[in-house]
Image 1 (cartoon, helix red, strand yellow):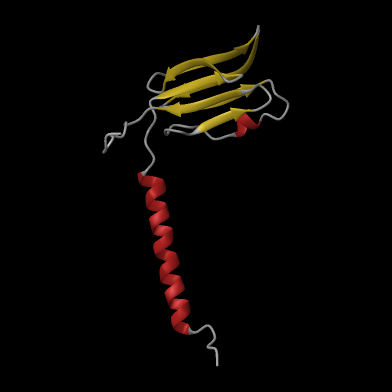
Image 2: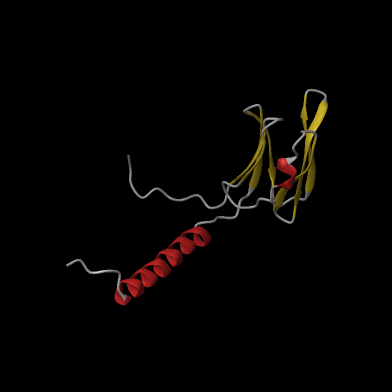
Length: 125
């Protein structure tokens, strides 16, 4: 006869799940590197790179019009104003770690955090 799900099975699954959550949390928090620059692209073309260490306000223009306003303050980048209809980029959280992004699809603006420690290669190709 087949055995059902027992008490030992539940304990095993609970311990396994807890270990898995701890490992994932470790990778998430220990793998995050603070960024150094906010790189802006408009229509897929490089617009500018701005250091996160310097507080500033950047007007992102497309043609003659300002489409987005990027504020860099306290080592974080945030889009505070946009002329797009949905304003999803304005409601995104501030970014400060490498590879985090803020995207404004209607205006085709991408703010990506670059920099941090470069990982050394451990093998020659």
